[in-house]
Image 1 (tube, rainbow, N blue to C red):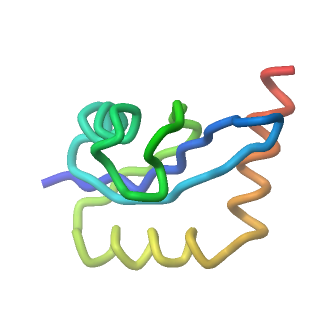
Image 2 (image 1 turned 90 degrees about the vertical axis):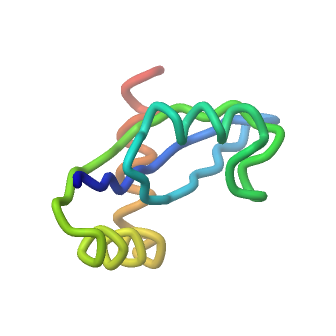
Length: 87
């Protein structure tokens, strides 16, 4: 089975918020986030997928998700790269 680690971004009141997660179905998971049925943190916002990476092993995907959640420098680098490209 393929697992995805992903980073989504939302803009509200000129502030960007990001969320990191893992899933086996990115499209379905993003739909859940955008319909307030995903994680509690993501409710009430419109989210865009800005980064994902595939893994063949669930444990490795979970470890990578944890690393990305804790690595603010890398997460912000990905976030600002995306923001810079849309302006």
